[in-house]
Amino acid sequence: MTASLDAFLGSQCGSDAQGQRLADTIRHLSAAAVKVRNTIIEGGTGTDLGGKREATNAGGDVQKELDVLADRVFEEAARASGIAFFGSEEQDAPIPMAAEGDLAIAIDPLDGSSNIDTNVSIGTIFSILPVEDAHRAEPKSVFMQPGHRQKAAGFFIYGPQLLLVLTVGNGTHVFLFSPKFGGFVEMTASVAIAEKTQEFAINASNYRHWDRQMRSYIDDCLAGEEGPREKNFNMRWIGSLVADCYRILTRGGVFLYPGDQRKGYAKGRLRLVYEANPVAMVVEQAGGSATDGVTRILDLVPDDLHARTGLVFGSKREVERVGRYMVDPSAIAERSPLFSKRSLFRA
Ligand code: AFP
Image (cartoon, rainbow, N blue to C red; front, side, top):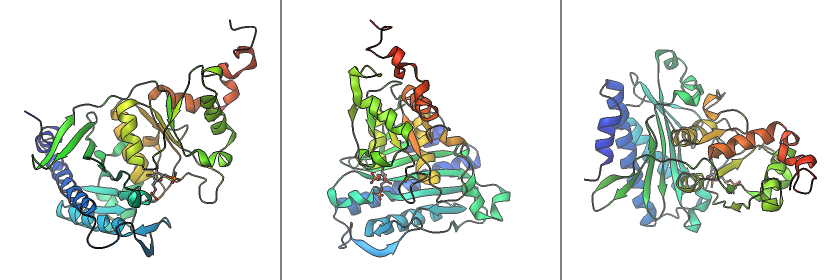
C-alpha cells in the first residue's frame, strides 16, 4: 500500500495542536501547488505565463505573470491554514494573518522564473517557522530566526512530474503528485545524499568575479585526475535551484553560488530565509551539508526577510572541502608543490 502524504503528515507532525496545524498547513500548500501545476501545464490563464509585468519584487527582480499568480495562490493557502505571518519574495513586507496563529511561512512562490519560457523545471520553496508572543509586536522579527528553528521545510518541483520534497525534522521524503490517485504519494521514504561526489554545479560564467579561494576550488576540480583532486569532475548547472537541488539529493554533488564582485552580489544571489534555509534543512536531513562557504546556513541569523547569502550545499565531504578552500587553499596538502603529482614525494 503506497503511503500518502496525508498519512505521512498524520503520523509525523505530532498530535499536539501545533503539530496538527503544521500538517494542515502542508496539506493546504500541496493543494496550492497542484493549482500552480495545472496553470503551468494548461499554458496559463490566457496570459503569457513568462510575460514580464512592469513590476519588480522586493529584490528588484522582474516579476513574471506566474510569479504573481503563484504568490496569490500560496497566500490564500496560508490564510486558509491559520498562519500568523506570510513572508514572500514577491512582497516587500510580511503579511499579518491569523492573530493567534503560532506558525509563519516564508516562501519563494515561483523560483526559477527565468526558465518559464524554456519549459525547464521550476519550483516553489517554503519554510515554516514557529511564532511566539514576542514576534507578534514586530512581524519582521519572526523571519529573523536562524534556520535551525524551522518546524518544516521543502519545495515543489513543477517538472515532468510534480514532486514535493519535504522534511518535518525526521529525514527528507519525496512525494509524487498522482492524478490517478488524486493526491501526493510517497516516492522516496528517506533520501540519503552520497557523502562524496565528482559533480559540481556553479554558474561558471561568473568565474572572473569570484574570489581567489573559489577560483582555486573550481580550478582544482577542472584539473581532474592530473590535478590535486586526482579524479575527473562533471559539471551541471540548470539555473533552477529546486532542479539542481533535487539532482543532488538523488545522485550527490555540490552546488555553489558564492558572493562575487558584481554590484549587488557581495552576498550572492540567493535568499537566506526562503531559499537557503529550507534547502539547508532538506539537505541536512538527507545527510548532506549546507554552508555560506564557511558557516552552517542553519546557524546564520537573518537581518531581513529578503537577506541574501552565499550558498554551498550537497555531499557532506565535498562541502567540508570547499570550506577548507575558503579559509586557505594553500593549506590544503594536495595543493602544496611538495605533494603535487610531479613532486619527489609521490610515486
Ligand atoms: P530566477 O527565479 O530569476 O530564475 O532565479 C533563479 C535562481 O534564484 C535559482 O533558482 C538559481 O539557482 C539561480 O537563480 C540561477 O542564477 P543565475 O541565473 O545567476 O545562474
